[in-house]
Image (cartoon, rainbow, N blue to C red):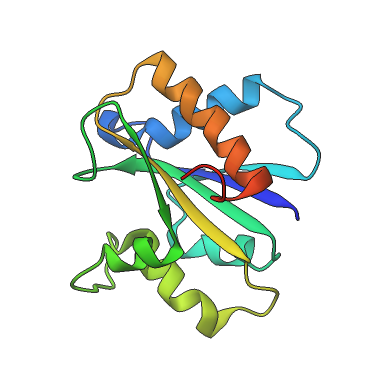
Length: 148
């Protein structure tokens, strides 16, 4: 199964830059294992939807808040991501739960077989970024099975 790692966030806001720091780390590790694609998703929001119509496995990497202690990495599956949004909203800050909620309704291609969020909580050290990069490759290649 092919895998895709999509790193999202904002380079100009320190508490939202973790996903893009992982992207930079993964870029430095090139080439990635066969069948794994790396995408800098930045702040593209709903423009992520066409990237999710290729089937396979998708791993989002992003900063999270309120899931763990600072410096820790969390893994959430598709349903857990959707469950994080107790009050759906549709403004600029709707985020990944909204993207995943509308995906089945607008998908013209093949839905991903597995969607995972690899979240980085709070300030991250270089070691945390490197660990998250390695974990994102493992999840993109093999899924959550064996990591939990």
